[in-house]
Amino acid sequence: QVQPVDSGGGSVPAGGSLRLSCAYTYRPTYVGWFRQVPGKARERVAALNTETTSTYYGDSVKGRFTIAQDTAKNAVYLQMNSLKPEDTAMYYCAASESARVAGLPGDRTAWMSLEEGEWGRGTQVTVTV
Image (tube, rainbow, N blue to C red; front, side):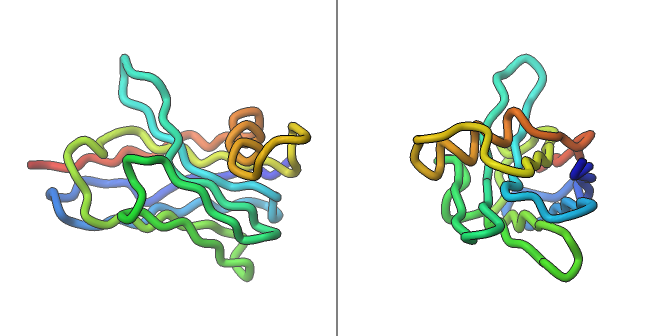
C-alpha cells in the first residue's frame, strides 16, 4: 500500500500562501488533492501523474495552486497561493498505484483512479478574511 500521509494545513489570511505535503511509502502513479467542507460535495483540487508529470486542476484553483513531486523524498506538494476564504476546507491527499479505469482521457483517468485509491486523514486549511 502507498499509505499517503497529508500535512501542512493551517490558518492564513486571505491573499496568503500555504504548502501542503503528501508523503507516501513508494511512488504511486497518481497523486492528488481533494477538499471538502461539511455539508458540501467533495471537490477535486489537483492531480498529478507521477510518470508523465501531467497535472490537472479544478477550475476554482487554476492559476493559483500548483502540484509538484519530489521523487527523492517520495512526496508531492500542493503550493497554494492567493488564498481566498472560499478555499477553507479539509484537504485530503489521495494516491493510486495505477490507473483504475481504461480508455478515458488522462484527466478523467487520474481523478477516477484517485477517488478509488488510498486516502490520507486530511489537513485543515482555514483562510481568514
